[in-house]
Length: 191
Image 1 (cartoon, rainbow, N blue to C red):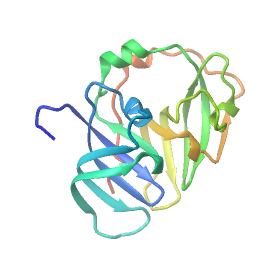
Image 2 (tube, helix red, strand yellow; image 1 turned 90 degrees about the vertical axis):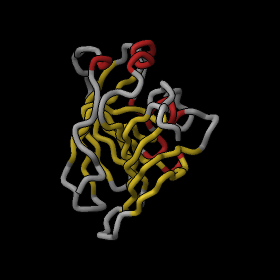
Image 3 (cartoon, helix red, strand yellow; image 1 turned 180 degrees about the vertical axis):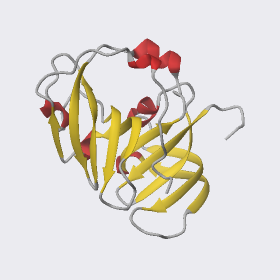
């Protein structure tokens, strides 16, 4: 990785491990990178890895290649990685309060669905929703280790790992555009 390439700090959670490091974004959003069908691999630099639920020593990597199909959730840290692209791709969506279960995690937050979107779209394999989707104003409860519930501005979850979901019956009132929001409040890998 050259020093000139723009990166974003990211925490990535798989079923068994957590990774905290940098991802080169080349002007794309993390959601775009994860949903990019031309590559099955997410490359992280200067990463630290630990095994979920153990007190084992952390492993440091100069570069680590991750299989995207194993990622449960990715949490961007710091300011937004592609504000212009985000602004240009913003579409008004209905917002619903959500409780989502992923293996070892209970997530509460806000899901953004198209106007004709239904909760079942989150679980259907042939849904028109992307494989990785953001959940905003997130609290992550983790059953695999002793981390306290952690709050983030956004977590990008892989839909195929959703075990169950409950959405509020009514959509939430419109809020200020998320284009102005940025960053995560804490790191999952801390602790």
